[in-house]
Image (tube, rainbow, N blue to C red; front, side, top):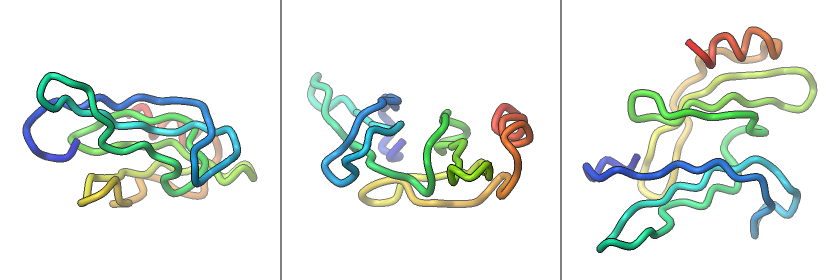
Length: 104
């Protein structure tokens, strides 16, 4: 994930965080350092409400919603401290189309 050549683990959790007190879907990223698992990023939030995610071509592909029946699929890439937004695959669409684009 962070480009150092070692494998990292992306884990989806449903919980609150220190900065976002409401329960929600989050992405936590862990790496192995000296044989021990260490957190790389304990994500509180990407760009919108996370529905699902997967790792595609070195990026996090996120299926997101604004909670008003508008969905998007966006790519994020590691930068310094955490993932940053790169580009929308599709935005402001319905759930069915967003899921289709997410699964391509």
